[in-house]
Length: 257
Image 1 (cartoon, rainbow, N blue to C red):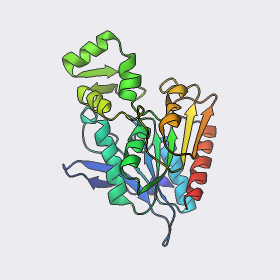
Image 2 (cartoon, rainbow, N blue to C red):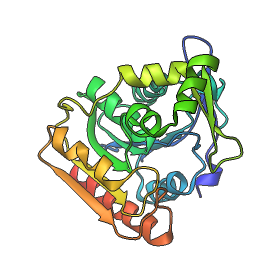
Image 3 (cartoon, helix red, strand yellow):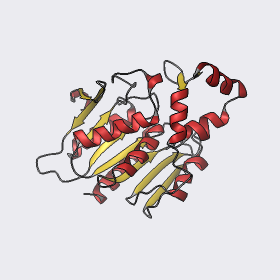
Image 4 (cartoon, rainbow, N blue to C red):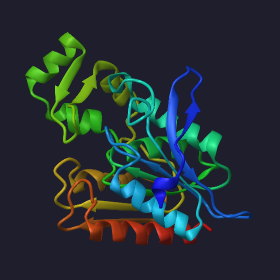
């Protein structure tokens, strides 16, 4: 169903192109637009993004998934990307492709980008659905666990390569790490007052559950549910995980319609 959606491109002021796929609710639709914000190195054709899109089409909800700068079929080189840039991509999608209320669905790094965008667009973003969200990961998870050797390599070469589950390694550039440091949000209140739903795997080796749980301590909203999935890994893409994701997306969408 989602495979019939036309691939389109949104132009950024610097000439870069953000690839996206979008389906509209029926005429007179007044519910929120759901925007999928994927993780580091992932793209909009992943299982969670497309599973939600199929449901959105079935239910007649407006839904957008996109590839960040340097990801998927968008233009740009991954190693030139930063958290600021990717969060600006989220805001560009909000500003230029959607109207009315927004629910941001952010996975891993997309959780960080979503939180940054939500704080900058409070009049638009009304709900957050975060999957293994990883705000501040460049400093507090990645750099914190690097060896002295890796830290020296970053200083000397301006880039560190770390194996990934994708075709090529993660490239952590000096720009990415410095920009990440500037955009940390876990050390002060995160001003967001809409409903927040967090799904987290207890067996996640990438974002430990105790890490993502810190969001509960700093986000200002009182309407926050944190679901810990005992056997859940980082991707939460098993059939039962996708069912759970759909249930939460439905609940949040109905609450904000």
